[in-house]
Amino acid sequence: MATKAEVLDFIRVYADKMAEHRQELTDFDQAIGDGDHGINMSRGFKAVMEKLPTVYEKNIDDILKTVGMTLVSTVGGASGPLYGTAFMKAGAAVKGKEELSDEDIILALDEAVGGIQFRGKAVEGEKTILDSMIPAINAIKASIADGKTMTEALVAAEAAAWDGVEYTKTIIATKGRASYLGERSIGHQDPGATSMAYAFQAIKEVAEK
Ligand code: ADP
Ligand code: MG
Ligand code: MG
Image (cartoon, rainbow, N blue to C red):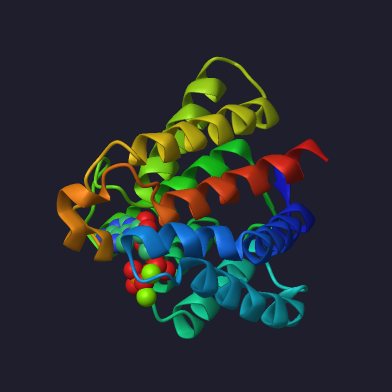
């Protein structure tokens, strides 16, 4: 279960993480892209934090949709439309909700990943955001099916997300700018998979409070 206050808290915690890890994410992108992923994410979430007070009184779906629209309109890189679509789709999946059941959370995450795949046409194993996101969602589903609590499931999800980030070091990028490097992208950690792992870290931290 997640309350609206927890959803707002997640957005704040994640925005802080994007500011805190700005240089690290940019360094990863410097190695295999154009060196702006941390700049893009921190700029986008700074804009989100400025916009957030205007939707405090709204439902969770409006809050998530506003986050998504703000990211799309403020981030020029691939990550803006991809993360933006994810938040918009997650919002649309929980229309009218004042709080989210475990099923709602899973549905929102499934819709978010569907939005990223629709927009970016990538599958797992292409060294993208999906390589931490899909294993994390699968870990949540497996944990819940095992009778674990959502907080326990989110601990497993974060671990799976970081395993996914490690896996990106071993594979060739076939989507996005890093794909221009071909085999030379091997050995480098994907910036987008990393920023997504921080999203699951943020969700877990909020759940554990
Ligand atoms: P840009 O590449 O436009 O500079 P960013 O640097 O902000 O944008 O984001 C790069 C990240 O976007 C990559 O590390 C990768 O994880 C992700 N990415 C790129 N293309 C796709 C795609 N088609 N599907 C999913 N994620 C993608
Ligand atoms: Mg970049
Ligand atoms: Mg760029």
